[in-house]
Image 1: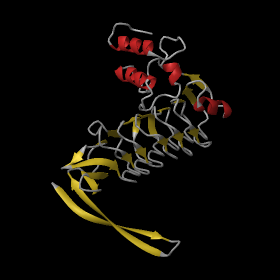
Image 2: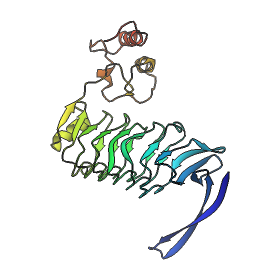
Image 3: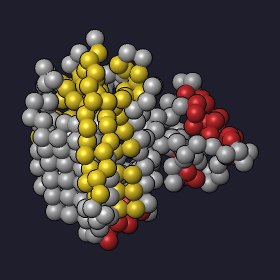
Image 4: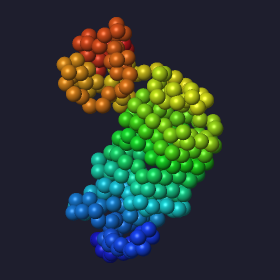
Amino acid sequence: MKKYFVLIIVVVFAVFSTTGVNAVTLFTDGAYTYADIDEDYVALYSFDNSSDTLVVQARSGSQYVSSIYNYAFLNNKTIKNVDFSANKKWLSYIGVKAFANSALSGELTLPSCVNEIGIGAFQDCDDVKSAIINCSVRDIPAQVFYECDKLESAYLPVLTENIGNLAFANCPKLKNVYLPSSVISISDTAFSGSDNVVFNCYKNTYAYNYAVEHNIPVVLVDPLLGDVNGDEEINIMDATIIQKKSLGIATADVVSNYDVVADVNRDGIVNIRDVTLIQMYVAGIITEF
């Protein structure tokens, strides 16, 4: 049963000495409170803390849960785990400081449907040890894991291009950060104060060169031959992408070292022979290239 109420948020713009008022319609649905976005979508606004695991639902009634509200769980000391498994399609945004200074702990895995993360979303989460950012985000925002005291490892998604200011700064236990070849920009402060960090990345990529310039140790990652779209799997989609590119047809995103990864027979040319080998691999006819 939904219970509706209206929250009046007063925002003061000091520069002009004027006051604007916006109304946000909230309603409760069991243990959850949502904010209406429109007739199709809602944002998760709060939880009644009846469990230390927050299960992010896919929908409330006929509306889909597409985001987690800014500051929704800031300073929450009850929720230790977030389970996104019920919402693998609709959740696209995790808000500014949504879980900052909360009791989240252990391994944090974000779903692939998320395409935007707000500034400082998980900063000061002192008990998170591993961050698996399995999202479709291109930008890792400023301060996203700033001052996470126990963070030891971070896995960035294959489409990552930019890593913002202080994103992983002041994380004293942070060691292994896995960076894809798609990265083209890393803030000079992104890893400030995280003195034990090691980059796991491909040679001759932006991340590799950044590490060399900033005296960050590197562990070189061997490219996964055949994985041309960078999803860490070799499947028929990879063969299809090579075929399309050979014909000059526009394709989805591919890894920056495409010419190396697509040349599975290592003859220096990407052509139908490579496509055939990938198809044989997928069919189980061969087990390696």
